Length: 343
Image 1 (cartoon, rainbow, N blue to C red):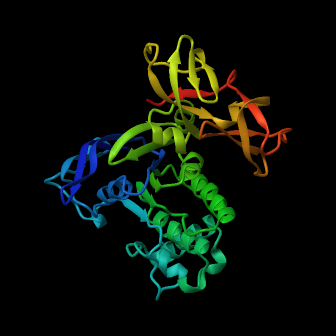
Image 2 (image 1 turned 45 degrees about the vertical axis):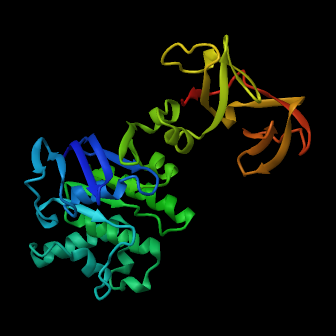
Image 3 (image 1 turned 135 degrees about the vertical axis):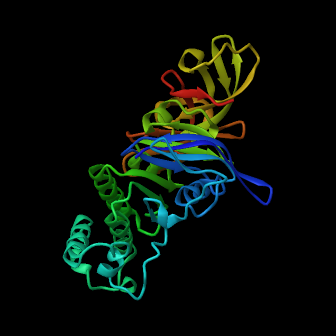
């Protein structure tokens, strides 16, 4: 089931939470909405669920109007499942009873089969008779996901669903959830503030900043061609660096970067000040030069080297242990830099 937002805007007390959002999600697609706190992510989710009325714009499902400023069916009349960050399980009901919520129209044996199937799908069959307060955060998340999928919703909304799990479990839950959703061909919209989570889960990522949709594309597109400083810094892992165009180079405090390495949308005149984003892993250094090594850290799969020049810092990253030490003078090599102009 496809979803389309057209010219969607929303305000709270005169403040624009969403500004002219145009977004389409294909049937069976997993789209992650990524953005900083206050960017409008949860507001977008609540509007789809029917928890917030549409003030301006329209929401269509399979090209049929679902909601607009005059039409706003309640959540129970929408074939939409919702999983919150805090799971919202019923504390007085067992795991099986929680999953059974919404299946009251089924015959007893059919309902029992559906419950058993969903519990098995998320690997918690042995927890059927337990109560929510006896479960870990990860187990509660699986119960919430099983309950949401039990009704076979056409659309599933996930609001920071893995935030309460620790790092190793979070990865396992993400991988499992994506596999289940793709198998069920469930159209999914998931809110997250974690770029790595969005890259792992999404077919496409919608990035909101201050209520505006600043970029929408595949993880690969956002990584290689960020169109906004927030996307460059959080998704593409590019660090900002000030420079000035001089001839065929962008001159920075740390050295000269050839313009041929920058994706230029248009010609940039000499003496123009610019801000670029450069990927740490694409930079190398050699001993001797205008920069000073300030710190070296080992992060398991790579080393990061922090260098400074004229009160500015730049990070380099390499899988090989650096030969330089803290305090050494070095030169940064931009010959193979991966960089884009941000402004």
